[in-house]
Length: 113
Length: 108
Image 1: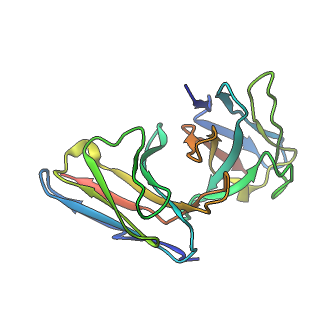
Image 2 (image 1 turned 30 degrees about the vertical axis):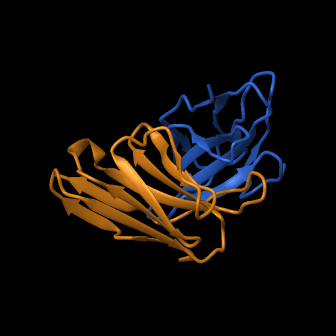
């Protein structure tokens, strides 16, 4: 299902460039999340948002920023990309009632040269 | 601090053998625990959660608060079970803390 859509799916860029990764969802969920996945480290939370006016840092927010433009859209920006930000990035959503399972997008593979 | 530990990076078994993927957590309150699975070339998806107490694709997991564990078990592994498995903890803030994952390889 394509109800959590991430764009682009792959991106190669150079050190110092500004990059934006986008996530949109049709599930009607209030909560949205950005993670990065690195081999041997699992998924680590970068930022999360519980509604349009709410933005919270996760465990590894340095070097990243986010924007919640609407309930359905949550974008992640790397202001000045560096090679150690090379990773697989996932967006996820969840319903706003209690603790609910998260639904993931397909991921964006980002390589910074 | 909240933490999830999956001690095995890789677990390799033969088809039909029992499987146990270990997960230990650290959390002082009442946790909610989940297992997520990522099959090759597919997105991460929920496999099961402890409050449901259900069996999905033959997998079960029991929360043991005394041992702070939530191990995933299946009595007879199938080749299609080969995937990456992540244990995750929610400590009341609606965020998930993920373990580092275990790759399960089921050989024919």
